[in-house]
Image: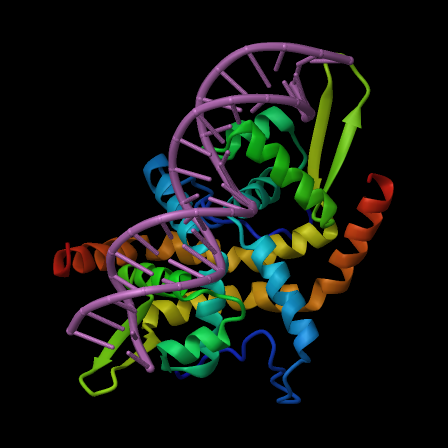
Length: 134
Length: 134
DNA sequence: CTGCATCCAATATGATACTG
DNA sequence: CAGTATCATATTGGATGCAG
């Protein structure tokens, strides 16, 4: 357990635990934000900047139009992205991260790097596990 | 886009993009790991160290026994946690993070802190959004 | 205590077709 | 192009009962 970061709720300085109400909210926010499509869209927007709907669909591997729309709406509601409609024909709608969205992307950056870095170890662990069992 | 971290796939140093196969794997890993229960269990284990099954259920707010078991199995398979069975009666089973799990917990730490820090902004954004619409 | 199996309800997601 | 609507399916999650 050496070197573990003092996580989430407990404040390293005060050593105090936040009140349960705040903890529940954090849990709720984590639940919403720790979502596959949210993370992947966040990543694409962080990398590409302002992006149109259709191109976003191409860049986010495997997302359906429905999930793309749905996730973008949620992210817009949570203040993570801004949706800009250009009144032209054919329609042109662009999405970009808000300041808040950028900070979340930065927070997730560590997870992306972790995933990229540790793929081999995960694959190995799975192979070992599956060998022991099924 | 100022100050954005060079995300995931593109290496800041080489400027090179990883091959598609790796990208697909990263996406898959993200999809598995960016899960509500995985994150919350990870957090509890990071904070409390080795923990028994039942207590884990109490510490992870709102998790059902089924999801707890299921998520722990996945995490075990992915090499994130170790499951130790003590041959006593009544049974005693403890879970703790592996080194790999600890590094993932560290990576997620930024997201926990982000959530805690930005709850107010998210609530405000939601209220504003809901006011504009529904 | 741990945790698997099963049934069931609720949600989430995907494919497809359609609209401004 | 950027969605919405609809239906079919998959996954999730809870409750319960049972076993080692």
